[in-house]
Every structure is written in structure tokens, then in C-alpha cells.
Image 1 (cartoon, rainbow, N blue to C red):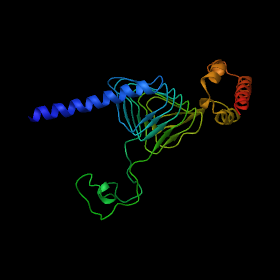
Image 2: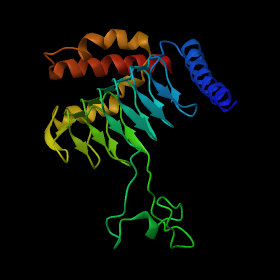
Image 3: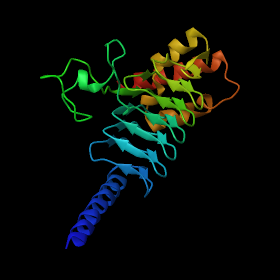
Image 4: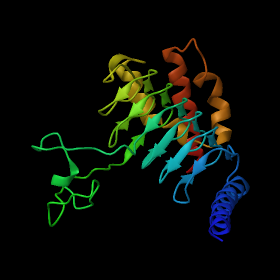
Length: 239
């Protein structure tokens, strides 16, 4: 009897997960989640998001055109648009411990009883979990670890194996343990212009017009001027 109950419960869980995946793929254009992905019902997705094999997502949001590499885990995070996340990446969900308290053990700042020991009548104001934010057009390499509460701004690149412990500026290339600035991708003036343009918010009809400029390996300042002109013109026509 117990075996039947466990089997029925397991089948219900699997059926629920498959049902969510089926509904998402029907309701959200271009959405795809591998059969081995694990996604909760609180996470939300824009169109053309890809979750590959053995990915794990909890209470997070993914913007359009972003993908999650094989074996990667995301929890309590917001992922912007057109961001590329490599394999075996961990973003958020690890929790924190207070390093400025005399003890880092939760028995002395929390009443949740993580170890079964509780010495306080009420928890301190320390928050173990924080929201993590990944911007738009961000590339995160394989086996990167992004700690809770970190913000990686638009256009940033994180080298494989890095551990990101603090906020990352727009269009910065970071690497190492802990992650440090390697270089800026473009000049400060170009970065300021790109952040202001927010091309990732545009409709596909506009992105098709500027696709060549966004994907040109011989990028020049004049390309940015042309990009700005096209986007400004399209914005004016929509008003």
C-alpha cells in the first residue's frame, strides 16, 4: 500500500512538471525546456527562452532570447534579455552568513533551527537570501558561481570558473576567484550610449534592421552612430 502511495505521489509530481512544461511551450512563443530540466511553478519566462539538459530553476524570471546551459542552477534571480549562461553555472540560492557577527552559525542569528539548535526568541535583521540580478546581453561562462544579492549589469562578460562576489559594471569583462575586472569591452562613451539605447527592448522588426551592426566583429564608432539613428527613428515613429 505504501509503495502504491509513493508511486502515485511520484507520478503526480512528474505529471505536474510535464504539464507545466507543456503549457509553457504552448503559451510562450519559442519557449523550450529539456525533459530533464526542473522548473517550479513560481518562475516566469518571456518568449524564446531555452532551458537545456539538467537545468534547475526556482522562483526566477528569464527575459526573452536568454538560455541556460546544461547543468546550471538559478534560484531567486532575474535574468535579463538575450543573456547567455553557460554550463554548470550557479546563480543565487546559496544563502549568506554574516561575517561581521562574532559567530557565522545560524543558531546565533536565526530562529529557523537549521541545525536543530535555537538560542534566540526572534531572528536578527540579517537576511540569508537576497535577489540576484543578471542584466541584458550578459555572457556567463562555464562553472561560474554568482553569489546571492549580486547584480551583473548589461553587456558584462564573466570568464569561466569565476566566483562573482560583488556587483559587475556594464560591459565589463571579469574573471578569477574572486572575480576582478580584466577590462572594459568598449570605451566609457560607447558603454554609456549602449546602456541608454537599450536595444534589447526593441521589437523583432527593429532588431532585424540592426542585427548586422550588433553582430559585426569589425565594430566601429560609426556603427554605433548608425545604430543610434535607426533606434531613435523607430522610437519616434512609434509615438
